[in-house]
Length: 64
Image (cartoon, rainbow, N blue to C red; front, side, top):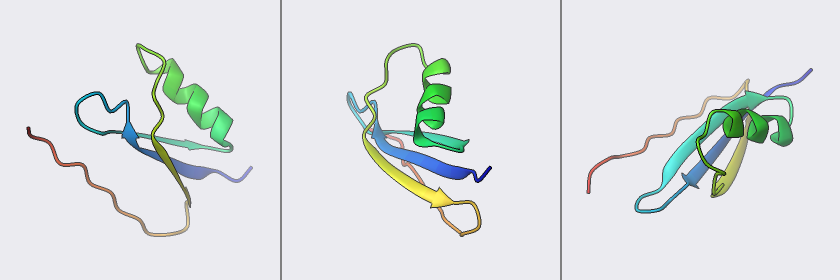
């Protein structure tokens, strides 16, 4: 089973863009995991998929 890192930017962006991540073997499995950890049905935003053998970095600044 090959797992990948799924990253949603602009996730549930009511006022500011959020971030959601999951490590899973498919996008459907990743979305299921995130739904199980969310209180509401998510607004997904932009999806970025990465193999787990590459270096990546993301940051999300807070503030208003």
